[in-house]
Image (cartoon, rainbow, N blue to C red; front, top):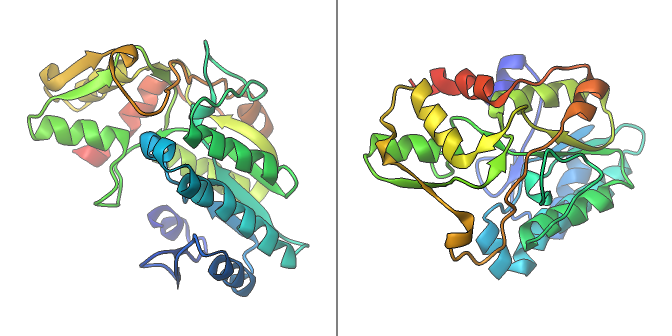
Length: 269
């Protein structure tokens, strides 16, 4: 919201509370009526259940929010057939095996990533883009912490935090996502695209470098191995992405991960 307000981009929101249209997005009737009433030219879907273990245990609700909700939106938007576009935020969890991965090689291994993969396939029939991504930065929601928030809060509160030393990824900052979305609003390219940084790192390396940028004590970061943790859902070891397709088609240059981490430090100081 803050980014759109700053850029003076008109928008309205749909969700459970504090939105222009308040309601339960699991209620298909509410969603359909709202979309037809609002007649949006562009719909940016940021709603998702992202707790991987929760999705594994609650497959039905995961598919309801992650797959069915955006499908209902897409169908309802056809009532304005001449001018509609959907920006779907997908996930880097779709990749498994040695990266960096290109868009043609998804391999979802848990219910969360499968629910996101299903909606990608459905949205191919509509005027839409699915952005496979992972993001960090200072969250404005007090009850929803980003990956970097969790690290920062642990260090500030002098509590230990375990970070995987064998899980690789290429996340981007919130600001980069917003900038890309702003370009997409104008260019409206369609298809499936990776949105990630260059030169990914492990989650432990991310935590250590993030602390270095903010001059925080790294002694509270401990590295653990994915294979030693008993989790409900399988996790990919390497989610690093090759985002050259998006760079080419939007004529942009994405940063390496170290620079991207540096770019968010001001928001934490």
